[in-house]
Length: 623
Image (tube, rainbow, N blue to C red; front, top):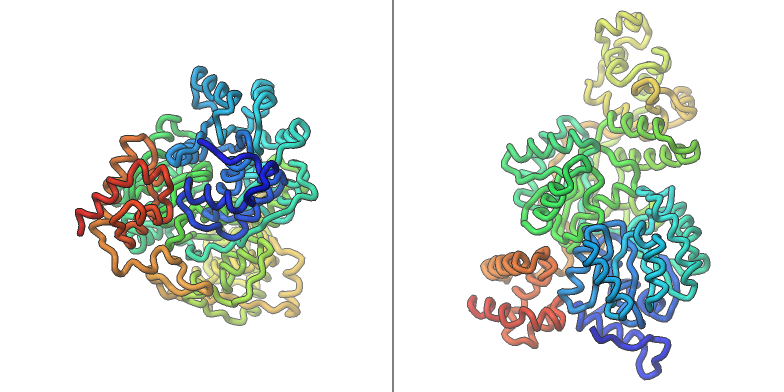
């Protein structure tokens, strides 16, 4: 597509004016969000930078627009074939000359893409890191006019990140081979340690870091005690998200299969996704999830990264992720369209034991294991927190929170009761000590409740002074105390002893009465209602849903049906044709002319040209 000349050669118009013109004509948007404008201007002028923006925050525009504004082709490095395909489809739909270069192409198709790159016929080219670093591809790039390098999912370059990929390490060669080409590294999640390594590996020392707010106010965070995970999940979906698209994360392939089958039997359209499935099956399931409404994907963490589906209404975890970064990244796949969504997780003591065992049995260095344990501890503390979960999340990423309540997490909507648990904690810690720090939760609870089981009698624990001292609590309550003491760091799970609980150094202060312990009281609790609630930033649904009281649901249905048919004919995801927010904009605006339709967010020049008359016809038919 025709694009303005390189910013460095212009004197008649500022970068921002031309960037805004492209933002509107290509993407149908009238204004930048947050730091987008500053980032676009900086990269267009040839600067390097690191960008941290939450999922759905508009990272793609930060490299897509500079690629159109600068001379040459923008090279986007991404490990995600699904993301490449969907973003290229959306760009082509908007009139941008974009292509992919990855393992899905035939030799003839790849050769044609290479020819177009050399000929200067591409604005954006998406390349997998392992392909980019081949001698053939590097030689190809040396012959082309490169506008910029965008390294997406940049946390993959760091061994401290939650998704380290060895093939990313070689990207340091870009700075050496192409020193005059600007580099922009982008990620949705990175703590201070991960950011430092990104800067070092990608030679971004001295480059500005643009860090947007990590807050996703439209997402409601909920963490519940795991009792019967599958049953709790079915109830959550049936009561709160019936008919909605969602993603459910499990740790093992077997569990993925079991949960998907159970949901399907319950009438919930669920599909499994994991690396053990045939590639064709994975592709078919992924296509159904992207293109159909109301599909629930049950998956390992291999699924979802880079899936640009805006209307995922919930993300559920039936197993504990390995870090807050992983939890944030995975939950961030919900509500990319800004509408209300839920991040729901069922959590139990066995999750801690399982994750700790995986860390201890890994082949990583001692330093890596120490960092991994610290990250796990932070996530467990989030799960057991009695305070605002959103505030705890943001604090982890170094973002200051000024309000005590977000109004949109379970702890803020139904504040838990807390009590002075010093005596209870002392009883439990004493039981752990007197039984030799060699037993798991169930055995310890049997001793505390005075149950003379065969195993308790075998070890003589029915003769201990702690036998039966905990009868004031029931088994469920003792399990909650155990989890909270682990979260506080007074107990740790010993993976070498199959989940045995051991005292930590801080337990001494509790046993001596020097350290206070406030515990969450286990009560049936109040169900979180499925209605939207005001958050500290206003309605979490944002303006996209605030004005829907006067809309026509029949028109929305017709537009969605039309969109599905067009998407099927063109072989692209429905949201590539029109986002839900654009459909809502049409329903609210009731445009009668092409000019009025052009002012709906998401309707750029090409979409107006391709679909304008059909959309107006659908509107007229409802008048």
